[in-house]
Length: 195
Image (cartoon, rainbow, N blue to C red; front, side, top):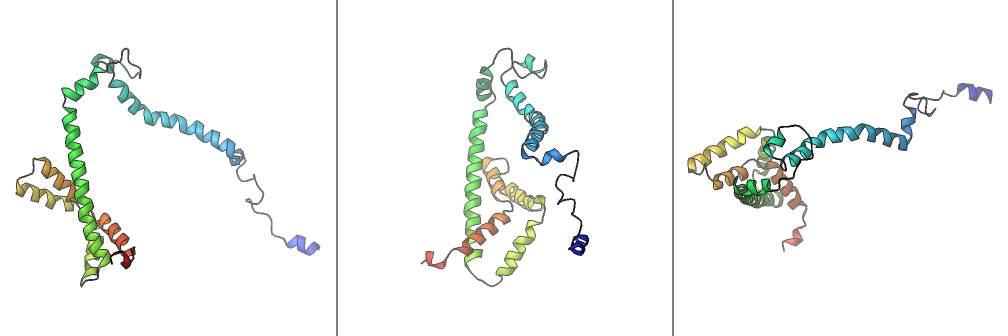
């Protein structure tokens, strides 16, 4: 009996419990840890969110109040600033343009990448591995290498300074990852769904 007790290995630091770090031993208590992290993260969150709060506050101030200091509460709320921005700065037009460009670009990208992904995922054709390898290789190219030819094509077509040019520029980039995601999805669908 005594031989066995003498040959037992000593307990490691992890087995002895709170001996690991004596000063921070209380941090192993979940409640204490939560309080400490809250005390540390709350000021960081306030520092992070303050510029956004100030921006909203500045939109309700007069021009003079904006440059007087960094206070968040304006002397008087200037709700007319929003009307002025919408009418005088034509934010409404920009909003409509953004909506048109976004919806059109997303529609073009989803339709074209879904069609390419369907072909890659469902059909076996000669050179398929080469095409997929080419797509995977282009993932590692910087965006500038793929957008420059698109930009030159748009300028050659004469639509460089139009909404159509922006839509085609946004939807003509390298969307290789999306194509490969669609290919993976379509390859997993059972063939019986097509029949």
